[in-house]
Image (cartoon, rainbow, N blue to C red; front, top):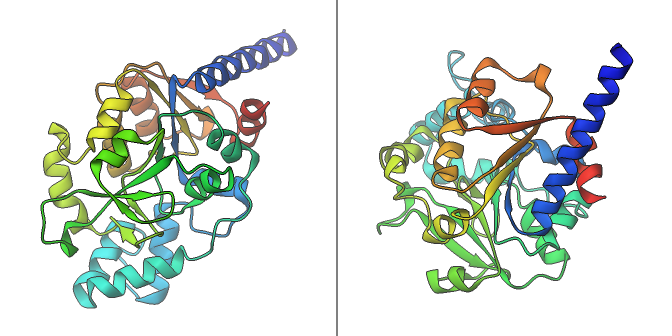
Length: 287
């Protein structure tokens, strides 16, 4: 009986992957890419907020009570040193260039996806798009308002890394949305507590969410890959980015590793769980 149940579970997961793959090819799902994907690339970059906190602490020791919290350690460095110092530290931590794109990112880069969300600071997905010969995409990155004197929440960059305007974002075949910023091309990082104060005050009414993202999510669902949601900040951002999207939504996670808050988040957002390791999911989706 136990063997039969295991076989049925494998069949169900295979069926889920097939449905998701068809939806991706049809541009009905938005990949939401988290730092867990770094393991597929083999690149040695921090893949959790706690790892970033440790890397920052190694450069500027923070008090014991906050040293495992990325946002607090970053705020400590900004307050004691300078914003430029924090920016330089983050750029150094994420300086390693993306290697040859892993098959999953190459697969996604070659699909006619209207929107991809990159929820970390690396540039692996942008590099995969360029490696696939794509010149019809833009990257929309969140920017800290600590460094600007104009009322903006994001900057838009073309495939060549040059600044673009909103018309370019509307015209692009693919919009790569990096809500927390990115190491390239301009070292934009939302990482300190102060970076998120105004964003979190406005995000519930969607002001910081780019118009191109709002338009492109309306008829699609989300596919979460390599995304930890153990921290409230990460859940808040995902919830607001998903807002007013059509669905359905899926998440590749190993159920026995979920925290209680993660399980509640997925249940509240009606996200269908695909219970499988990320490496297995990558092979199944690429085909």
